[in-house]
Length: 445
Image (spheres, rainbow, N blue to C red):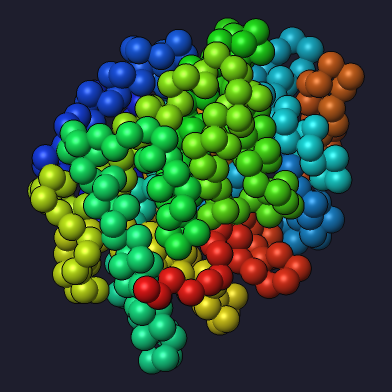
């Protein structure tokens, strides 16, 4: 269990690599070297302000926007939430300056776009320097699968049967392109435009690819941008979060209302247009980067270590065989399919709290009071509400005309090792009842 959680974390400051499938044209070390040393902003992977703050062992200042200040005051409690940080209170980094606390550009974006919220400031004093290991939600598949198998008895027989049928249906529908991804990862490239168009066409039947597609493009934008805005953030040790925000909201109508990456699927022509609107100089290489990076990433987050990506096929697998050969991918599909069953709101805490307990145990053992999103260290950082060895202080804050935060009211609150209600999380449902992060539709052949 501890090993699985370790594999789901990435340390961008280390050369250590995870075990993965064989037959790949590039190793994980090759891909990391390219990202870090062959892109303009690759040095930020290990040299960013967030990583340096964690490693310093000094008090860590964070901000959190909330619509529930009255409830927090009344209860005196703060809970963790699910989402990309699994079981942490979602925050952005603050940097102390003589005139106030300066938000990371992710925090500045939140302040600009969440006008209806109040902002809390946290001071977390760790007991030691914090390991710079970030949780990567794209690598949680094996944990999702194990959680399903352990808690399968919570489902009715018809629910369980439908869940398995839906997952296998999606795999069978997408199998031709999934095999194409593996072929590309093994060094047999598909023409760029054809690859992007097939990727876009497959996402509706296989929503997990929308997450991979978006994260790869976010990586491309943040690591390769050379605009004055990006350079200014880089001088502060920050990746430019506004780039992928612009991409998401331009690519998908209504994304600002329900951030649902299962709907992210621009085709080749649309992709070039979107990137050109953001930064024209990055258009010529985006399709090639996406083909190479996404294919490699898919192979490493889908297949069990030791499986041969060059010969593996998704065309004929049953549930049990895929649980052994592609447990990471099967788990991701189960996790997302589970979220759209009618009883998920009732099952939510039973399923997600089980993962939260494991995540907290891993972070506590590893000395991590402030876990961060490790897909790429873009500045998304959280508070481990179960950590026993860090001192935490909380204030309500105000923002001055310079955009700096100033604590104005100390709150008497306690961090609790419990997940907040589903309606308050990134896995919420919209006004129609549709779950964020998934399209409800048939995937049968």
